[in-house]
Image 1 (spheres, rainbow, N blue to C red):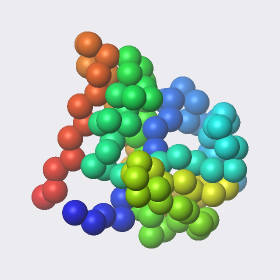
Image 2: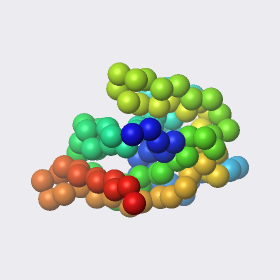
Image 3: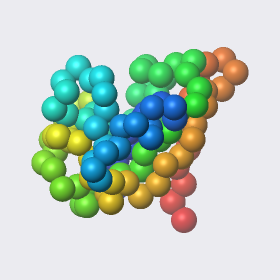
Amino acid sequence: MKTDLIFHVVSRRKWPSLNKNGVYTPDSTEDADRVECIHADRINSYLNNEFKGRKNLILLVIDISRLANRYKVDKETGRVWVEKGINLDAILDKIRIDCEEDGSFDVEFKAD
């Protein structure tokens, strides 16, 4: 299934301080000039690898066609790297997510 939606995970506590001047830019990334995102079909493995046991997270739902900055897709990992931040009008929704009791995530997307 081809979709124009990608997702980014951020701490609910940090979210308000990371979107300034109409752009969301994480404060600490391995590469400060890029924002790491993921496609829906890989979200569970990504969450379980990178955020196992974490609570109070926000899953940003991003429309890739609305991005103001360039992006690159890594087809092997399913990750999307957005350069220089994400314009807030490309973020369609913010969904709070928490891990299960065992620390794992099971996020399910259903098409209507």
